[in-house]
Length: 175
Ligand SMILES: [Zn+2]
Ligand SMILES: [Zn+2]
Image (cartoon, rainbow, N blue to C red; front, side):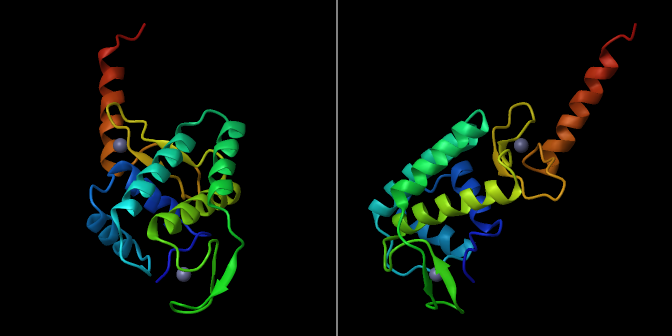
């Protein structure tokens, strides 16, 4: 399997990396394999450094206020990772790469996350990246729902917040 930048795979993987940053090159390699990324080269500490920098830039996109600011930050990521797209069949059929061949993993993730995020925002909506609305939770999520109304990172957070709001209503005397 290959991460599909048109689908939800890339933004969900970026959110996973941002919420729980890898602490070693080995862990990064494992997380990439688990996400379905085909690793072409051994993963080096420099790949981890670049990945963490990419995740920092991506987190700024998530937290940007307004569509213009968000677009500007994504465009900067695209510009920094740009290469011409090309057809390849190195793994399970023909697909597009938005990068040069045989790049180190850090550069692969940079291009993949930049392009995948741009496609997610234009195809699903500029407001489809966010942080959980539950008190005390800052988990980042990519909203790939049909309804475009995701506000929480998970069902437990949604339930916890519903209980909290219910209690707040009960403890407020009605006038
Ligand atoms: Zn590929
Ligand atoms: Zn949450």
